Image (cartoon, rainbow over all chains, first blue to last red):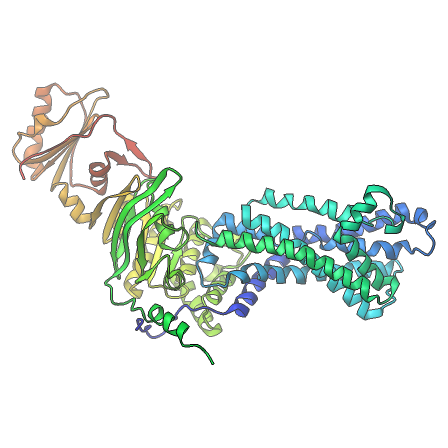
Length: 266
Length: 350
């Protein structure tokens, strides 16, 4: 029999996956709200990009029949807001300070260490879609699918942001280096620029059009645009979901493998 | 229907009586290799329950590597280690539930408050909300950071961070507490406070404490027994008083002018001299009655024409023990001061 604890003495035990998940995500949400240097640029950049792109290209795009360029650019703004937002730098800080070692020396569920952060990321990126939607409303963009469409728009953008976050997490767990995490930003450019960013895909030609065909962001943008001005289109939405899932399988898979490597004794 | 087999397999694991062994920590032939470099080489330890054990050695001696293996952060290359009766490799989860750890650098999150950090720590150890609240209150008063508990940790001083780190290691009432250089970088006042807390944790709560340190005075002040690790090997072990007594009741230490070399044999014939060691230009003479023999030693030095810089008579310190087992003096901050030349020892009688 194990030793009987003295009166008033507590005994360590596994808290269980859900409680671990809540504990880790609470901490991540707290630190996100205190980490304004991450959240403020995420709010400013999409607004800036939206104003610049619409201001520069709206007249030019008016030559494309039936295109509301302000509505067309709103999903781009939302992807700029949510792509690359993660608590991966927190992982780096934890690894470097030794706090990560402290966490893995508790009976915490290892999966909760990653998913807890991602829950906080999801809350943050969904919150970041709100000002973008408000900005679109101010610019005169309305959703033909109504409030349900706005919710789908926000959730889909949020899930995309979450799935993309797997890449910086993978790098953070693998390297424990802040500069290496910044390399994940390099993925941002091909994903967001080699797609129907400025003009509809039908208007694109040459290699960029081919690249856009294979870029999952093309399908995410199409799904997001469909709920603004295309109406409910199950096929387009499904393609968007599949594209997000495909990226998620790769990015979260890499992140989990890197977490396992970090939390396993060498 | 649930199969009984897995339960039967698990029973021995959970019915293992961690209280039957009188040792809180045991290692046998513990080795850790990094490439071709052997950081820990065949270390055998037996730390008794309720003991404060000091693990002493300079930077790079292997202290932290040993502690990281014992706290399940690093796998041994070979050998075996148990903590609280559980194997660090095959029963790591059980080991983790029994230990508290404060590593070399205070492992904290600067963007949380002290209270938030302790609360999270308690939650991850599976404590209930009520238990967490009670433990946070108890620990805040134990480590004396009460008023700062609701401030961000980033605003804490080094001493406060160390004490909070200690509190985080204690949240779940561990049976064994590992402290890796708990006072490195602290000012003397903060160091003394940490010492008081370590003594209190040991005496009030009965927690076994495994403490690595690079400060001789810390090991001397806190530890019931010390192990001296040098180049990955356990070079000496015992109670500080025993280790010092082995060096003789008194020591006469002569520091000669640079360049002077002596093998020490010349002093072996002086009555009451029990051993003579020469390390470069320093001679350490162990004697049974220093006051009676120091004049004879001084005369001998004069007779030999040695140019003496400093001649002292004192009782042995852990530094003398360290010099004896490693051939180098220990300096504050954990660096060793190599003494040039061989280190012959001339034993006199039994």
